[in-house]
Structures are given as C-alpha cells and as structure tokens.
Amino acid sequence: MARQQKNGTGRQSARWILGALLFVQGFGSAATEALADTSFGVVGLLRAAGLPPWTDLVVGTAGAALLGWALTRRGTRRRTHA
Image (tube, rainbow, N blue to C red):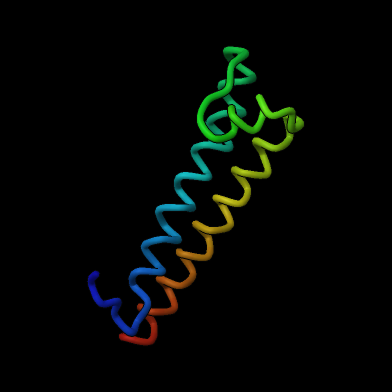
C-alpha cells in the first residue's frame, strides 16, 4: 500500500472523484428521468428500491457540495504555498 502524503492529497483526490461521481449520478439521473423517463446508475437503484424522485437531487447536491469543498481546499493550499 502506498504511503499517503502529509498534505492530504489522497483525501483531496477522493473528494474530487466522489464529488464528480455523485454529481453526475444525481443530476444526470434526474435529467434522464425528466427527458427519457428512465433513470440510471446508483440513483436508478435507489428509485427501484422505492425512494422518492427528489432523491436524485439530494445525491447531486451532495456531489456538488463535495466538489465545492475540494475546490475551496485547493484554493487554500495554493494560498498557503504561494
């Protein structure tokens, strides 16, 4: 297993990846549900399990929050290393 650096680059990468994944899954599924009457991915499975349609937007918003967090952490790191 690779050693993680002290500056948290592994965690930062995880925020970017998970944020992008949830963003696409949530808002993408909501868009395809509205346009083509079908859902896909993780949110499609949540819909099949009986969760309400607004769950798509919650998942997409969680992804947007993670992306925003990753973006602010990136800006903070740039300012401290400048």
